[in-house]
Length: 198
Image 1 (cartoon, rainbow, N blue to C red):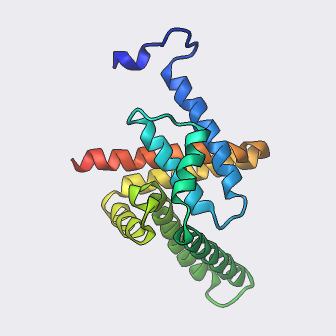
Image 2 (cartoon, one colour):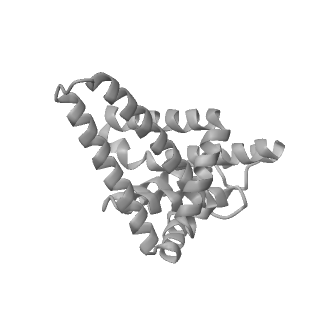
């Protein structure tokens, strides 16, 4: 615990503030990579991998982020992004149909919201898994198991997402910073769940 409080010579704020600054720089890099939309899963997965590496003594910088992204970007990442985009559009279409006043719309909207939240949790937890760097199917399979085995972690993922959305809604320029703290939260939930299973 004492090494967390120790400062390097010339370091002004300490290692926790350094990690926070690194998280924001990774968040900016992630926001830039997310702009084409179909790259969102790959961008978030890469951010989680870089921040997970910080716990193993590797630098969590934007430069390392882009280096990891260059090594891992493949057709499977774009396919995962396309599936995520199609699922989002389908969910929005379902909500629009429910809002059109169809019979049973309130029940349909509630069921759609639960299914959408579950899919979102599994998708986000898949981004935090190391398997997402090479195999999205395995990452989604393991993330679904994690979501069932660790409902507290799933609630934390939803809370992190709601917090990120509220920050971006309240102050629009923060939208370019929230991917970093969101990736840090996803990584922390994954590490927490791994430590609890040991």
